[in-house]
Length: 276
Image: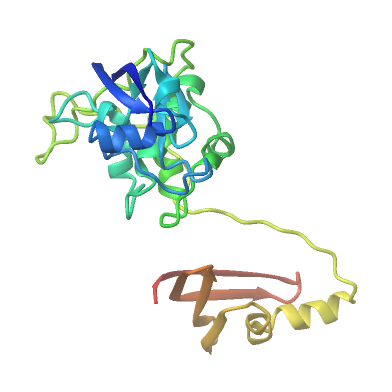
């Protein structure tokens, strides 16, 4: 097997190595340099877990041969922090917003999130979700990840030279509360902590017949896959829902309050739940 000498700068340090022509960059980083923060997931460029910065641009390191990185500057998740004892503001925001669970996707998410913050600045939630579409997460549901990016991007202007611009260290989160003399700058308030889903449909039925069906919660629950209505006592309701996405299964139980207005043919169900 022929070997090729490469010189790369990884997280600010120059490395020289002899590598096979078919060695992928993710394997070089993990096995040769022992930078195991970059994760090998699908190894087909789909999941985004192996994302790194190559000359300042997010790249899938599983789709690049190490020899192709000759002369390049590479940043892995280990290089995002300002030092061994601190976190960048983006990493800290992931921590505060509960944007990770198992952590497997987190290195790639951080790399992509850094690019979003520096390249785009403050953008809409829809744009953040679009930019994160190439990074898959099977744990969080993405809500905390999106919130973390929004938190850091709030009030920022896009930077043309994103490759050289650091996402600064956050010094306001310490094991003890920060001093009152230098409080952290709060992110702009966002209305509500939940999400609103709205849908409209047209029914081929008379209004009275449609209201009779939709105002019967037991009939409605029977039409929802995985839903179960346990009790219905006046305006108080309890129930549960189970769902599955491939091998990932989850169930939730909760209680709520329902209010119906037959005259206006409107209703509202509010409630809260927990893992069931």
